[in-house]
Length: 169
Image 1: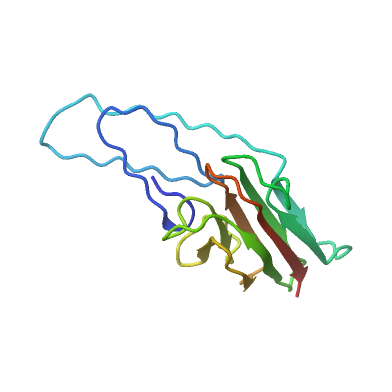
Image 2: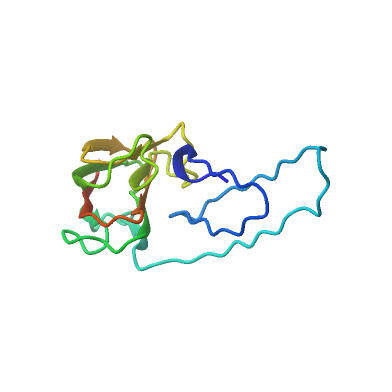
């Protein structure tokens, strides 16, 4: 199973597990060999959105900037928080996103808690157009088109999270 920006989970045997992704795009691939024959697999996929799954539409030009942040920022976010923002600029413009405050758990590969930014605006979080950030790293991104997508995965350990400033350019 593939999560944002190329994170992968491999599931084997007859384990029953729940896997969560902070975004609406999720890909599962079933692969088998001829070593042993079993009946196959069963998978159930359900969608759950939260108040921080938001489309921010700036396309009418009445607003040109704003802030997004992890839930409860600057206090610690609830464990396993997940959010996604789609930020839309007017035609002919792009979005600049500056991660101003980053206080997330660091892990090699940023797989436990992270902010993923897809500059393509497709919300597929393909590794070629997406960067995953964790720890205390700050960075600025510019969309390649009129939309930028931001996903937040909080993980099980609660930290202060992040705050980002976006503006139409």
